[in-house]
Length: 236
Image (cartoon, rainbow, N blue to C red; front, side, top):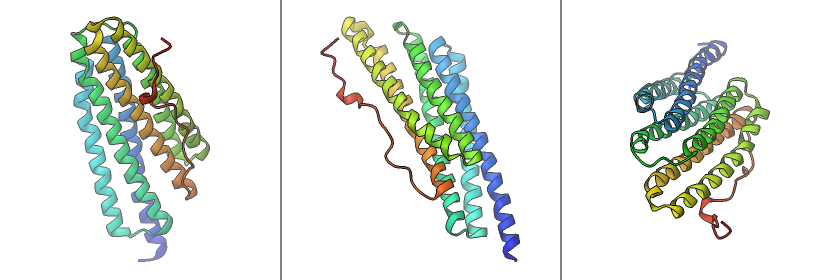
């Protein structure tokens, strides 16, 4: 088999994987959007559709894994090509975890729908999720075009998600201190906010893979907001 034929076959296989990655990313982006909407609207039917839709995300990841293993076995990529394959595997795993976080958000809707109403909590989580969703969309665009500048912009924006999480933690703690009846619902919202922050971390991690794909170099340390563990409520 000629080198040109091997390279052509590798590129064709990689394009199939690339298209699957973008399809998977689109489904995850939609899951995040719908889970946050279900949470704000207390829409249990919409939440259930997100939960059920996670199976499709898992299936795409399984197909990507299968295609990657096949590519490694048949094409035996080296150097830069191997870097591409490994990075894609890691990004697919990140997307699958993002889908799981969206599913977990949706699973809490039925519990929160029957509990105390926390004014503005659902809308605030939805804004936080919208920020992560936009980061995910831009990361996928950066991946599709190997756009380093866009990937680096996504990485820089993760600090905004951290700041939003800290603000939400303060808000939920205040609600719990003001009325113990709010504790159960606020704890659920706190876990959700923390999970959305982790979603931002996963998107940022994938953006770092895009930079590595395009340049062969890892980005420097990403900016981070203050840890929620350091929140001081003494001024409130």
